[in-house]
Image (cartoon, rainbow, N blue to C red; front, side, top):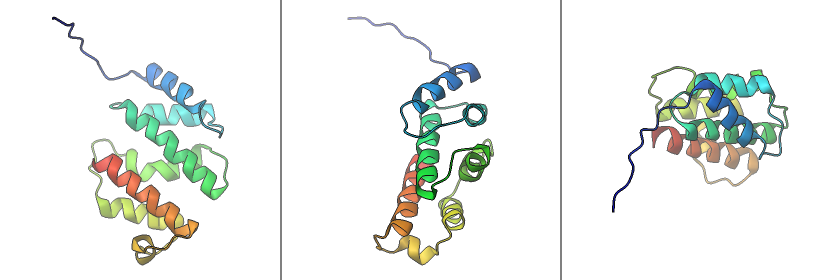
Length: 133
């Protein structure tokens, strides 16, 4: 049996934007076009990264009861994704979560199950798993 070998290149900006629009439609929050463009400009390598940004942004918007805008996108995603080629470390992810959600390191590492502590912990674990694989 034989098969075809196909080289798959990184998606270009227009393709990333189309993917973002398609994925954004499946969320129950509104993603303004400028936010989708902001994300598409900054993620060039991996479609999964592009998709995970929507999930992270949606979760943060719901938790904080905010509308998604360019400022929220920049705040939430900036710590992790804006520096091209930068290797993110666990303590940097934790510091961003602690700062954004205004909780202490002890609270983040505790076993408390209240939403204001468990949600940031879940976001932190997700980002560590996703970014550091």
